[in-house]
Length: 282
Image (cartoon, rainbow, N blue to C red; front, side, top):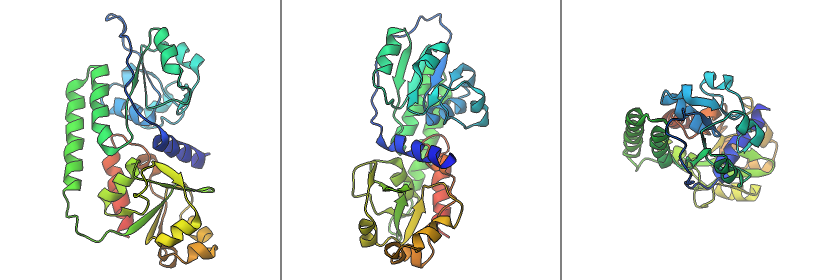
C-alpha cells in the first residue's frame, strides 16, 4: 500500500498541468475554512501557521503528523464531492483534479477555488506567496519564500564544471517509467550534482524500454520505488540487460531514499536535494 501511495503521488505531480482558476470571493465576514487537496499545499499551510484554518485534506496529506487528524476528502487528485461539501469550506486549494468539472461546481456553491502550481522548483516559492494571500499571512509567506529562493540560488551557484554522473530515475518497474525535464525531480538531481539521463525528454514522466536504458548505460540508478534496501539491485541483476549497465556492475542502485520528501514539492525541498546529494556521494 505504501508503495502504491508513493507511486500515485509522484505520477500525479508529474502529469498535472497547472493554471490559476478565477473565482468569486466569499463574504468578507465569512471565517476562512480552507480545504487542501494536495500534500504539498497542506505542508505549506502548516509552515505558514495556518493549520487552524484547515478543515480537510486528502489521504496523502500526512505531514506534519498533525495533518492526519483532519478529515479526508479522498485520494490525491480524486476527492469526493460530497465529502468536500460536508466540510463547508470557504476556499479549496489544489494542484489539479481528475474531474475537471469540480472547480466550477464548487464555485456555483460559493466556494472559492485556487489552482496553485507546484510542478517545478521555481513554483514552490510563488505557492508560498499565493497561500499567504489567501490565509492573510503575507509576511511569513514572503519571508519563507525568499529564504527558499535564496537557498536554491546558493545551490545553483555552486561550481558547475564538476563531473556529473549519469542518473537513471526509476519511477516504476512494470511498466518501466522514468522522469523527464518536465518534473521538479530532474531539478533536484541537477542541484544534487547528478545528470538525469532522461532530461532530453520534455515530458514530466514517460515509459521507456530496457533497451533505451541500456543504450544510455547509467552510472547510477536512483529508485523512486518504495522497496527494502538491496531488493531492487538483486531483482535487476537477474536480467542480462540490466546486468550490463555500469550501475548494476558497480552496485550503484540508490534506494531507501525519503520519497515523501523527494516526491513532494513543498517546504522540505532543500532537504530532498541534500538527501539525493548524500546518496550520490556514496
